[in-house]
Picture 1 (tube, one colour):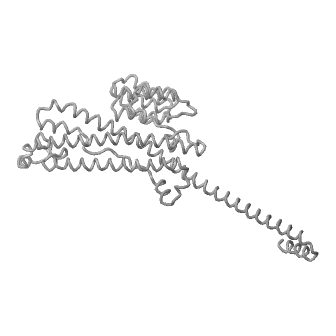
Picture 2 (cartoon, rainbow, N blue to C red; picture 1 turned 60 degrees about the vertical axis):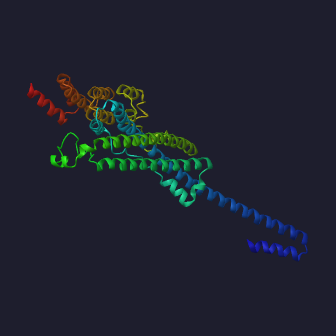
Picture 3 (cartoon, helix red, strand yellow; picture 1 turned 30 degrees about the horizontal axis):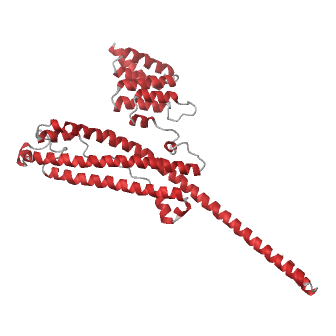
Length: 379
């Protein structure tokens, strides 16, 4: 092709057609420039496509980490509010009624002197973005929010740990005076030799121990409140960032709670304070073909056992098992579980009826066979 163009130029010069030669030469230059521009454009398209693919991968990684943090924070908030703050408030409420330092110390035995499971945030992707410089691929608005969230996560985690370290240091002072809820019960010496208990003269330190306990738990409680507030804010910001990135991706995810799982879990409703009746209402509202929450027979059954064995709430467990029968009347296991709950509540007649129904649906149900055999012997 190059030889062909060169031949044309020579012919034009040999024929003395200088004007045409220059026009042709200019045209050739224009064609070369156009070719270069097209090549550069194609290269830019390829580079942009590569950048878009890299950015999309980063987006999916970020969303996965945001979802993990969001869901974990939910349980941490419940742990702080339910397991610690409530107990501490009861302790403080009873303080004015305590008649001695010893009574104050005894009342503190119910307090949680360990810490809650503070959230260790998933920050691998943002750290990679910052380390590699790929953070520049992220649009400014999202980039700023992502960096701000990372900073808030770091501050929250550090503050939580600093608070607990301070608490341990303070409570260590009380321990040095003889306070240790695991080893030194204050009503005597059922875990240590009586003479050792007397020799250490722990009773002489009751007033100081009581003051340290009250002050250290006060500081710990303040830290817990701050952590609770920080985690709530981080959870909200994580969801806000999720919505922005999800929109950039074309909204492939239904919501942040279902990024790593197909369904939301009913446990979150339970942990947020919903009653069994309210949870049942949510289950009944679900579209069986496309539910928002996990309402499988197996999952509902496990929820019933959570009420029964962990929470020791038999009436609520019975409601859940009954609902499972209503939703899955042709499945044998809900009848078996319902019968078990009835039996624990002393309703043998109805328990037998449901165990028998379970056997009709599954003649190989060994548990029902065993229970019915034992009930028959008792009668």
